Length: 218
Image 1 (cartoon, rainbow, N blue to C red):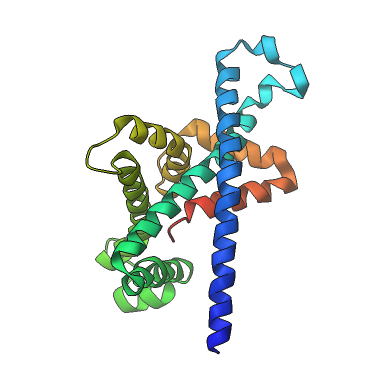
Image 2 (image 1 turned 135 degrees about the horizontal axis):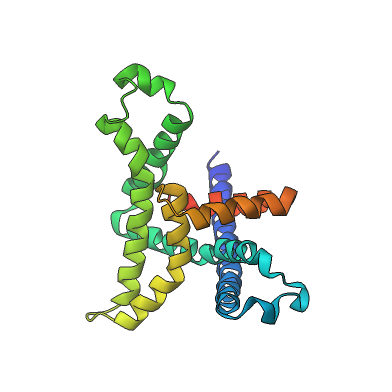
């Protein structure tokens, strides 16, 4: 039994390492693609429409795919912030913060009946509010810890480093705000829907990426 547990932990560590390696490299590719999309947006559409197979009418799709992939950098930053919290609080507390409570919140979201029988359906109840807001607040805490660490690695604050990492975190933060916090931005919502429609069956990959990065600290 002990050997099986150790093997399970080893496999998880290897999977986490591989996921972070992939997220880091794909995220940087997405950041470059997002920068190129910005340059295309600034340039007159007729100057690049049809060049190398690009279509000006498809620019929202290009931007959305680039935004999704660039957000993987932000996911890796949130994971690094979580690592720092876990190191500070220890294994026992971190297991509660990052495993037990998120799983409880997820279970209550997917199967609300049991909790409704205990406290009622009123979503204004403190426990329902905790179920709704604990996971996103935990994610924001991990991001804040990461940015604080990078902008102040020693005694003084390095504002340029902090601003640089905040810029790289921005695609993740934008998706998180719209898809998780419910912030309304019509252009992004329309671009997201259009992208899923035009990608067809390949859209499942984009949806998996979105679910993966938004659930970073869950």
